Image 1 (cartoon, rainbow, N blue to C red):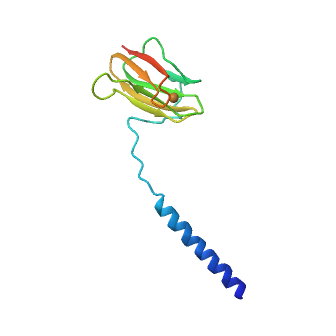
Image 2 (cartoon, helix red, strand yellow; image 1 turned 30 degrees about the vertical axis):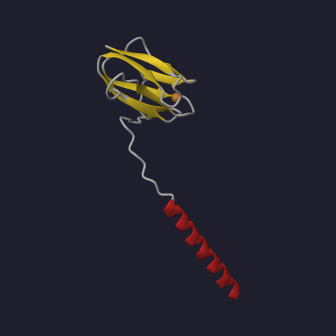
Image 3 (cartoon, rainbow, N blue to C red; image 1 turned 90 degrees about the horizontal axis):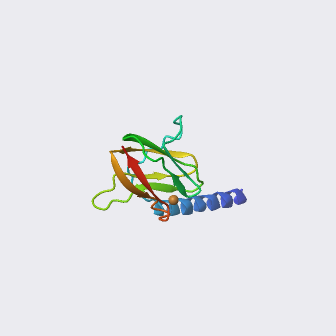
Length: 125
Ligand SMILES: [Cu+2]
C-alpha cells in the first residue's frame, strides 16, 4: 500500500511538471498570407518547384495559377516587389504541396524567400 501511494505521488508530481512546462511553450502563430494548400486538386500545376528550381512556363494566363512544390523542403513563391506590397507570396511546405495565387497581367520577378538564390520571372498575359 505504501508503495502504491509513492507511485501515485510520483505520477502526480510528473504531471504537474509537464503542465507547467507546456503552458510556457504556448505561442501564437501568425496566419499565413495568401497561401492555400490544395494538395488534393487534380490536374497538372502551372508552375512546379523541384530540386531547388522553379519550372515556370514562358507565360501563364491571368487569374488562378497553381504552384506545386515537389521537394522535401519548404519553399516560397514570392513576388519581389520594387515598390509597395508584393503581388503574391505563397509558402509551400513540401513535398507535393500546392498553392494557388491570383495574378494580373504583368511581368513579375520571383524568388524563394527561404533560398534566395532561387529566382525566376513570371510573365502573365
Ligand atoms: Cu526555397
